[in-house]
Amino acid sequence: MSLFGLLEVSGSALSAQSVRLNTISSNLANAESVSGSPEAAYRARQPVFSSVHRQFSDPTSADALVGVRVDRIVESTAVPRKEYAPSHPLADDDGYIYFGNVNAVEEMANMISASRSYQNSVEVMNTSKQLLLQTLNIGR
Image (tube, rainbow, N blue to C red):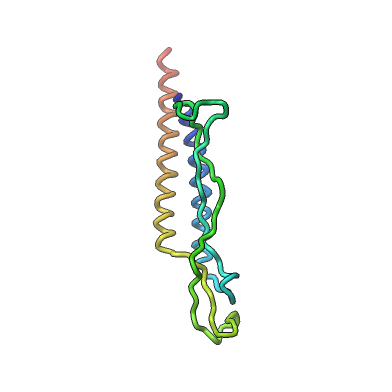
């Protein structure tokens, strides 16, 4: 794989981790949102990644890999948390309100992981850039 290929892979990783961080931010922002029914409660979302290969290339070849992409964003199937609050304006007929199924601790751990992955991709890009610059200076 060439140094330019590293830049391509790192760029796609930056883009994917950016989507991941935005999804986590959305989940944390809606962690305590309240609704009057379990169907209307916020559902945590997670991005699904896949590797991208060059078209018309052998997928086992080192030159075939060109990065990562976000295939889709899926919603959690976990049951929303319900709480008995008959005086709440959104309470259902039985007096329950429903919170989103976001686990804030899990989301914070995911945020740290995504942030570190983003930083690593930036470091790969910086190192590739330095190597390319040093290669250009060899001929001087």
